[in-house]
Image (tube, rainbow, N blue to C red; front, side):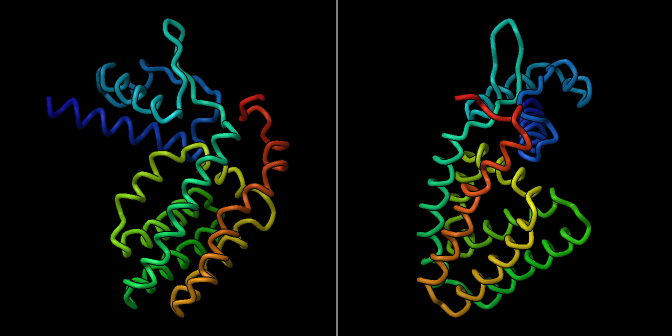
Amino acid sequence: MQVRRTAGGDVYDRIKTDILTLSRKPGSEIRINDIAEDMGISRSPVRDALMRLADESLVDIIPQRGCWVSLIDLGRVEEERFLRHSLEKSVIGLFIDLAKDSDIAKLLYFVSLQKEALKENDGISFFTYDDEMHQSIFQSADRGRIWQLIARETGHYRRMRILSFDQPGVLDMNIRQHVELIDALKSKDLSRALEIEGEHLSKISFEANEIIHDNPSFFKKG
């Protein structure tokens, strides 16, 4: 039984990563047999993983027909952005109270990795380091489980962010806002940190029209 749980966790992580990084495009079909054969496992853990992903609204399962990566729902994107913003602005205050110099240094380290990824035009690594920087804020504030909730419940927003990285100047702006946020956290300027965090998470709303124009088939109609 333990082997099956491990296999189920592995296939869940793999499919979810593929969806969030757009390796599996919104609307593309997911074939259980292909995944099972590729990973050398039975169909059961693949089905279990897809059920978990369906609960997170990342896949659509139609009985007797098949399974597809869910289209991005703009209404859900906004709800998920609101969720993350609401939780993160509370955690920022805790971070300012609890953070040590080593915590600030860790944030700067992730920004340095983002800069390297930008030079190498590696959008997936850039996205990963972005997430790891914000996760570090939650962990330093002793709220790591809250970040896990955000990671689980914001798949539509996170895919939208990946698409936004193709927009001109977005990656440079992302790094600039991170540096400004870290400066505000280091100086314990809560008001400024919250202002930057709000701008950082809400900018995707201003990029939405361009993103949809460039990727119309990825979005849920209506």
